[in-house]
Image 1 (cartoon, rainbow, N blue to C red):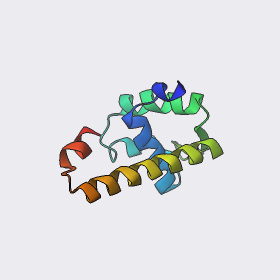
Image 2 (image 1 turned 120 degrees about the vertical axis):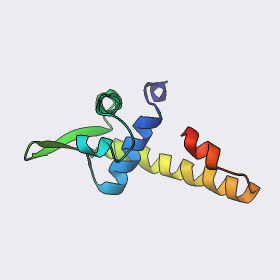
Image 3 (image 1 turned 90 degrees about the horizontal axis):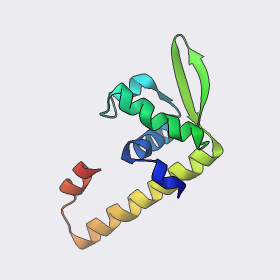
Length: 101
């Protein structure tokens, strides 16, 4: 399965790119990851056709979602909403779950 090439950090990158309109290497710290983790998760997203290098602003590359990347990110957002609503309905404490993600 292709989804096995991705990790939680990959999902963070996709969701952040969806929310912000793109992603830069300097965003790694905002996402709570180091630069090597950023690149390790960026490369499979590019290889799978979910992200593409869009432009260089100054010395910063910006990566944008492709149409496929947008579809995947919207599905991830939908899954996150489904899980969140389930935990709210069940009255479960999600603090530990959120930390694990």
